Structures are given as structure tokens and as C-alpha cells.
Length: 521
Image 1 (cartoon, rainbow, N blue to C red):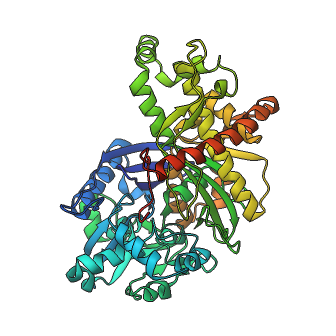
Image 2: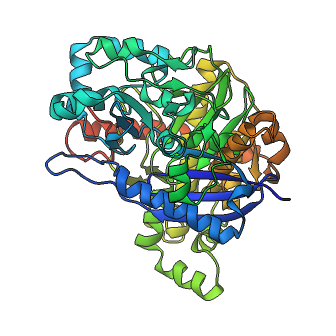
Image 3: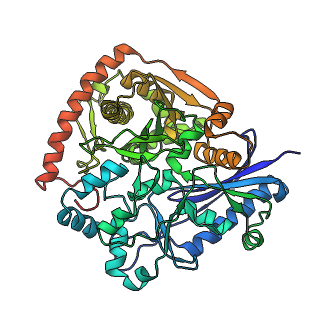
């Protein structure tokens, strides 16, 4: 009798329930979009609507089971993964009081307050947690204390969004290191909460739930959750984790020294390091607990790389869209075919979009293209498109170099995944820019697969996440670097960094407008 595992993936823009068999074959998926609510008169707020969003979770679970046409009792275990940084607060009875999505940026004043009134505290906390105030939970909790004191008084527990789903299913509020670590109230080395961090800035320090490692058994689906979701009370609820870290596990990036670039709307560059490696003193990158005990992940982020491509496609590429429709293929295939004819370096075009990661004080220049010329045979949609692909790889490469410098990790290959890895040219460019072999996994749902692997570990199907990855991850393509092209990109990388500094100065002088600034700047 075939048995199954369910993964619930709570992303920024949607919720999905994905059913796999125990050999990692995807059986069914159901997805619903959700939106986060901007509170009236609260700039940059993005409230997470627990009541409405739970109904969407239930809809996805029911639809996935229906599509799979299976007996719910054959689902051995369920786990969840979610956007990181999003938090849910509960009262003494475990009822939700208040929740925000990862994109909530209401606490800008609180970030500034902490920086100005607690000298060197951010540096102290970063050395322990690998996180800065800008994306962490302390400023949000401080905002709640200052602006919604009646709610704050009732707060008894905190968890992450994925933890909330599992709590609804099992009745147990808990968190794991990979997701909980992104609150910034957490120790990388101990893989546990640091309540004294909260106490130090006047926040409740007894609200932190127990920490369970990914793959830990939490309980069975409760009778109430069974009746509302269609899951069986014999199904085990297993601790999941953060989307990037579980996604890395779903790509086989489970050992120290392994590296991945996740090419989606934003790009993440992750490097597995030992948990006792101290984050860099210059606070240039983020460091998170991995889903693998004993490991952390140093993480670089490249803002908007995928979204910039979408903008370029929609703003300038009507001709390619028409060609793609006529040939019944993806428009990016057409653009890559044209960009393939452009030489490495794209005639020195310098796209100015995301800066390299400067986690302590991070902001971007105004979006622009530099070094365009008036020769239409050279400076056109194809060369600009190629320059964007090259630029995403260049920024990723610089972030990886920063991580190598402080961690001492050496590597010679990169796992490249996400929507960008579908591009043959883009994959080759990543190899050429970095000088490393690039491997493409044959998986379309790495994050959901990682959560299913966690469920499988908790059900005793796999010994641990590392052995599950070894058994389940299959490789599709490999790209070797063209070292002649790398010479071109090494020079272009230097030019780009020098140009970006000048573009940031224009923002500082209020001549241009920053594409993005971290809260509190």
C-alpha cells in the first residue's frame, strides 16, 4: 500500500499543500493566493490575517487530498515550511492575538530607537544571532508595546508562520531553529532562544516556546483539525522549518561547505557553515541556523533579480512576447536565444539595481543602466537582457566571496535552483562569473520537498534530512565554467562595484531615489 507525506508551504504571496509519495514523487498540489492587510494609518504595515488565512490553508489541504484521490489515513505525516521573519503572537489559551507577514516594515521608528539608544547592542546581538534589527522581531514587539498596549499585555507566546500552521493541526506551539532564528532573539551556537535579548530592550522574556529540531514529532492531527481539514487523526504532525533552509535540504545542500544560489524573485546565496563559526564583524551578511543540527547558513541576498527581469520583459519586450506566443514557448527562451549572440560582458553595460549585501546598513541606488551607447546593433534589448543576467550572477558572486572570506569555507561547485535555473544561458553565466561548476537539480518544488522530507524523518521513513537528500535529490544538468569569459567578468565586476558607489552617492545627495532602504535608515 502506497503511503504519502504532505508539505504545507506558506509563502509570502500564497499558501500551498503538496502531497508526495515516500519516493519524492509529487502526487498533487493545491494553491491559494493570500494577501496581507495594510493597517489604516500604519505606514508599511502588512498584517497576517490568521482567521482568513487558516481557511485558505484548510482549502488547500482538502483540495490536495481530493486531487490525489487518496485515503487521508494513508498520509503518514504532515509538516510545514514558511516565509521567515513573519510572526504570530498568542494569548495564554493559545489563541492568536496578532500576526505580521515577513514583508511588514511598520517598526522603522523602533529600529531607529534601538540603534540610537542602545549603543553597540545591534553588533552584540548580531554576533550571537547573525541577524540585525531591520528584519527581526524585537522592533515589531516594541512597536506593539508602544502602539497596541492592550494586545501586548495579553501576549504569552510567539511563533513563526509555519509553526502556527503546525500548532493549529497539533495543538502544540513550538518553533525550530531555522525559522525561529530569523527573529534575531536566538543563538546560532546553542540553537535556542536568548530571552535575555528581549529583556535587555524591555520586551517580555517569557514568551518563547520550546525549540524542536526539524523532523521532530509534535503530535497527531487533533480531532478538531481533522474535522475541518479532512486529515486523519492518525497522521503525525512533524516540525518543519524556514523556506530557504528547507529548500536547501530539498536541493541536497545538507553538508558543511555546500553552496546554493536560489534564483527566484529575490536571489539567495547560501553557504553551509559550522554552527560555531562567528558571523563577520562588518555585519555584511546574514547568518541563519540551518535545518541540519550543527550547521548554520551564511546567506547573501540579491534584491529583485527575478522581478527586474519581469519588469524588463513587460516594459520592453512586446516583440519577443509575440514571437513566443507564435512559437508556443516561454518569452525568456526567445530572449535568451537573442542574448546568446551577445559577447560576454554585454559591451560593458552596467545595470544598477540590487547592491551587494551590506546587512548592517543596506540600501540601494536608483535603478538604471550605465554605459549604453547609440549603436543599436550593440545596445538593444538582447544586450540589456544579457547584462541583467550577468549582473545577477556578479552580485551573487561578490556575496559568495564575502562569505568565503569570513568563514574560511572552500568550495568548487554551486547548486543553482529556482526559476532562473531554467535558463540555459543564465546557468552558464553563473558558472562563468563565479568560476565554479554549476549543478541543476531535477526538482520543481524544492521547498515543499524539504518539508516532505522533514515529515518523512518524523515518521521514520528517512533516518535524517541528510540521508533523505542523498536518496531523493536527482541532478539534471551540469555547467562547467568558461575561464576566458571569467576574465571578462572579473574586470566587469570591478567596474560595476566602482560605479555602484558613485550611484549610491547620488542617493545620499537626494539627486536620485533609492530602489529600497532597510527599515530604520
